Amino acid sequence: MARYIFLDRDGTINIERPNYVQRWEQFEFIPGVLDVLRLLKENGFQVFVVTNQSCIARGIVDEPVVVEINRRMCEAVRDAGGEIARAYHCPHAPEISECECRKPAIGLYERAAREFGFDSSQAWAVGDDARDLKPCRALGGRVVLVKTGKSAGYEKGFWDIEPDYVADDLLAAAKLIIGIENTGG
Ligand SMILES: [Mg+2]
Ligand SMILES: [Zn+2]
Figure 1 (tube, rainbow, N blue to C red):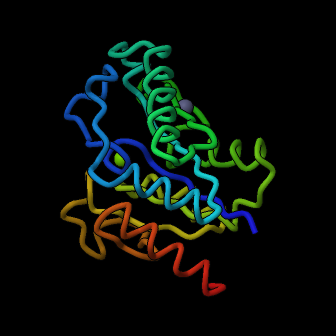
Figure 2 (figure 1 turned 180 degrees about the horizontal axis):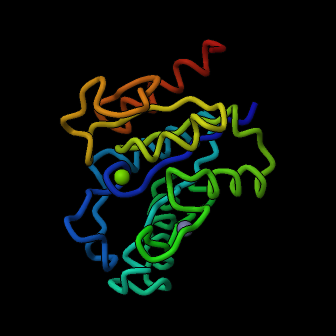
């Protein structure tokens, strides 16, 4: 059975930078993440990256640069034996224009489910911020918070959404999800 997982990018896959990842040279995988993506592929997961990149609307990074950074991320993952089915980004900034794609909106999660033909209520989401988790919860999926980025100091009750699970990092989250799926949960 196919398995589906939405991953946040900054703070979940790569180290969060104080003022956005503006060039590929600033993109640094969190240690172990490439192995995790291989593990997910070996266990039959299709992985979708969904990332808010308001740096585009704010004029800090050109959209083709963001697209290129995501392409190189996918390439590095493939070279390490993993696979990202597709990386989606929202280029908008809330104070400049409203959109349907900036997390916590569900737009990009719905789009992935439509493009790849799966039921999003069967999906998982992993991220370091409440807004990564809300779309998947809204669509009926299960959500795991990782404490590698914005949420390092997370405690229960911080947000208006409680994750189904909290994990130290993506490896711990992946092991948890694989374990649940393998026991038919
Ligand atoms: Mg993040
Ligand atoms: Zn958007």
